[in-house]
Image 1 (cartoon, one colour):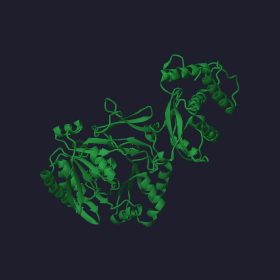
Image 2 (cartoon, chains in turn red, blue):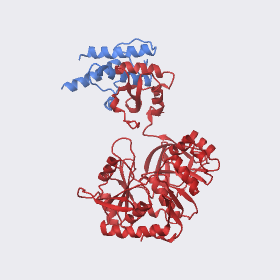
Image 3 (cartoon, chains in turn yellow, orange):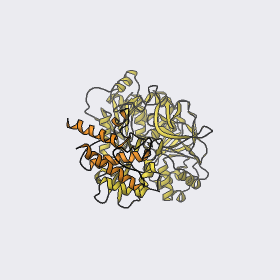
Image 4 (cartoon, chains in turn blue, green):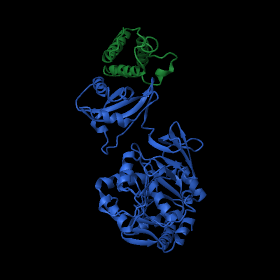
Length: 446
Length: 97
C-alpha cells in the first residue's frame, strides 16, 4: 500500500467526504480503495493507460487511488460532452475506460494502436503511476500533459493536519481540482462535494455543513454576487476563500471583500504544467502575491513569469516542449508586475500581447473600441510580423456591408483616431466571413 | 506589370496617406520615406507598407512587403519609393520565372 492510502486509513473515523447527503469516514474510503484495488488488479494490467470518466464522487475518488495503487496511468475525464471525452481517450491512447454506474465501476476495453509513448514507457519501467491532464486551449487540439503521479502524490507528504471543512468546486480533471482533493485528504480535513455547481445550491451547502474553506474561480465568486446568493444564506462559517485559475479583476476582489468582510482571501497559483504552488497574498484585498513554496522556484524574465517545480510534467504526448527551457524552466506566458517589496502581480498573458516596437498592445482594448464602431459586427485583434516594428496590430473584421479592405481601413483609422494611441490602431484590416467567429464566444486568435 | 505601373500604384497610396494625415511634401519616384527628409515616422511607414500590399491585392496582384525577406537586404527596400518599386518588381519577376 502506498503512503497516501496508508495515511487515509490512519485517519480512521474522521469524516472524509460528504456527498449527496451521505457521510463517509476516512476508514470507509480506505476500505473502498482496498476493495477497488483488488478489483483493478484482476482486471487491468499494471502500467496501462486508463480513462476515469467521472466527476467527483466517493466512488471515483476511491477508484483514483486504486488505479494509482495498481501503477496505472490515470486520465480523469469530467467532460459531459461525448465528443470531447472520446477525443481525450483517443489522444491519451487509453486502453481502458472506467465509468461509475450506480456506484459500480464499469470497465470497457478500448481498441488502441500498438506501441506506447516513450514517456509512458519510462513510467512503466520505473513502476510509477502516472496522470494525464489536458490543457484547455482555445484553438487546436488540447495538449495532453503527463505527470509522474507517484512524484506528485509524494509532494503532499508530511502536511500539517487540520480541522476544517472544505467545499470542492473545481473539476476532477483539472490540476486545481485535483490539488484541492489531494490537499484535503493529506491534511485530514472533511470535503463537501456538491452535486452541481450552481451558486445558490453551493451556498446552501456552505450553510448546511458549516463549510470553512471555499476554493473557487473569480467567475464563480462573481456569479455568487450577481445572484445575491450570499444574502440568502448564512455563510458565517466561511473563514477563507481561495481563488485562482484565471485573473481576478481588482474591482471584483474589492466587491468580494465588501460582501465577505470577515473572510480571508487567498490567491493560489498553478499551471497544469508545474502544479499548484503555495503562495501568500500581500493582503486579503490585494492581487499581489509571493511564492513561498520550497518545491517551486520562480524568476521573471522580460516581465514573464518562469517557474520550475519538483512536480512539473514529464512532457506532452502530442506536443513539443517549446514552452520549457533546456534546464527545465516553464515559461508560463503570464506577464507580471513586481513591487519594490518583492511581491508580484499577474497583469496579462504575453501570447495575447502585441509588441509594436516596444509598445505593448492588449488586443481586448482595441477590440472594445472597434466594437463601438457602427457597422462592425464582430472583430478579432492580433499581432502579425512587420519588418518595421517587429509586430503590428491586425484586426479581422466582420462588417455589415460589402466593402474593400482599403476603404474599411480608412473608416476604422478615422474612428479610432483620438480614441486610442496610434500604435494601437490596426495597421492591417482583414475582411472576415461570419463563419470564422466561433460559436462559443471564444475568439480564435491567430 | 511594368515598373511604371508599379510606381503609379505606390505613389497613389503614398499620396492618399499623406492627404489623410495632412503630410506635405513632394511625392515622386525619388522621395525618401524614412531616414533623412523623411515623409513618415515608424507607424506611418508600417501603415503605408500595409496599404501598398492591400492596393496590389485589390488589383489581384499578390506581393509581400511584410515578410522576413524584406529585412534581409543590407539596404532596406523601404528607404524610397524607387526602392520599394524595385523590390516589388523583383518579386513579380521571380514569380513569373
